[in-house]
Every structure is written in structure tokens, then in C-alpha cells.
Length: 275
Image (cartoon, rainbow, N blue to C red; front, side, top):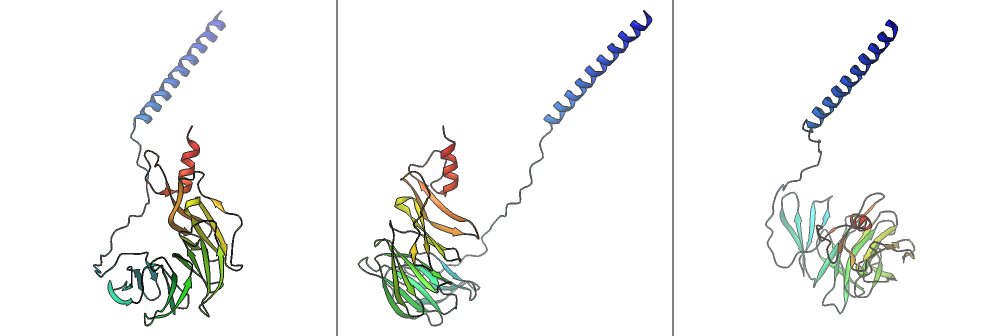
């Protein structure tokens, strides 16, 4: 009988201990949850305006082109190209004799620059200028509305993308002669080279990107469908890293809560998550 009572007492004591321990752990959990969470450390780099230049001058503003080795910034200004020294913020020169310029490419030898000139739309040219004198040395006919232009260092060729002609004009920079014309399936927009024998160009109306093989002077038979909707189009922005192509896109109509411009991958992820 005494043994039975002792066992019962032990069981009661153990039960009370377990209950007390459980209450204690629950209280600790509640207190921990009530504590304010420490803010997560963010290492986002904050950019700031370093300087502002009041350049003045006539004409609109086009896409900038920087020669980092000489600190010269080339700025299309409708019918001329303004050149600014980035170390002083002062205008250092001007390329004259142009009509309606769009984009600029530079060779890798520091000698020549190349400007797409759409004129009045009835003819297109690449204006070749000497970067030491800023004088136009020759004009090379292209397709209609030459827009983007890329210098390919591997072939030492220029690839000029003609919007209205839906083509790419290939120019040998050693002779300044057209050596090929590549047909495209749509009007080209922005273009960028990957430095490894490929140039990617947007076809906005088709929602696609196509790759041009610079060695073969041909466009890839396999195109990348950027967006599944025909109203979602690649915009005029492309950039590359060593293995990644970045592109901005627009979607019409814009989904609620989204800005008109965002990455295609972001949009596709959002669209695929909708029920």
C-alpha cells in the first residue's frame, strides 16, 4: 500500500513538473513574439547627383555614347552631335553636317565614330566621323530609318538596324562598304552586342528578341518570345552581363499596381501567378 502511494505521488509530481515546464515555455514564446523584430540590414547603394552641367545648345536630346578612355561624351542633338568633356563638364566640340541623328557607335581603336542619320525618312545613312577632328569623312547608305547601331569588335563590322526596311545593314569598317543585308521578321528596336559574336535586337511589335550571328551575318532562326501577349512589347532598352540579357518591357493595359516599365521576367512571373 505504501509502495502504491509512493508511485502515485511520483506520477503527480512528474505531471505537475511537465505542466509547469510547458507553461514556462509557452510564456517564453509569447514574450519572444512580443519583442520588436530588429530591422534587417540592407546594403542598398544610394546614388546621388555628383554634378550638373548646363550645356544649352540647339536640338533635342538623343541616346548618350561615352568614350571612357578620352572622357568624351557624345550627345545626339537632332542635326548635330554635341561632345562634352566629362572631367570638366564643358562642351569640347561638335559634329556638324547631319540631318536627323539617332544613335552612335565607336570603334575600339579610338579613331572613328559612327552615327545613324534617318534624314527625312526617304533615305538612311551612317555618318562616319574622325574622333580627333570631329569631321564627317564619309556617308554610307543603309536601309530606311537606321536606328540602332552596334560595332562588333570580333568582325570589325558595323551592324545597323533599319526600322522601316526591317533589316540590318552590315558594314566593313576597313573599307566603309556594305557587305551584307540581313532581313528581319519585324521592325527592329534596341540592339546590343554580347562581345562573343552575337547581337541581340528587339522586335517590339512581335514581342520578340532575335540574335544576329556576326560571323555569319545572319539572324538566328530561333527567336526568343519575350512576352506571351501581343500587346506586351520589348521597349528600347537592352543591356548585357557575361551571361544575362536584361530588357525592359511595357504591358498594355498596365496591370493595377504596376508601373508601365518593368522587366519581362517580373511581368511573366506576375502573370503566371494570377488565378
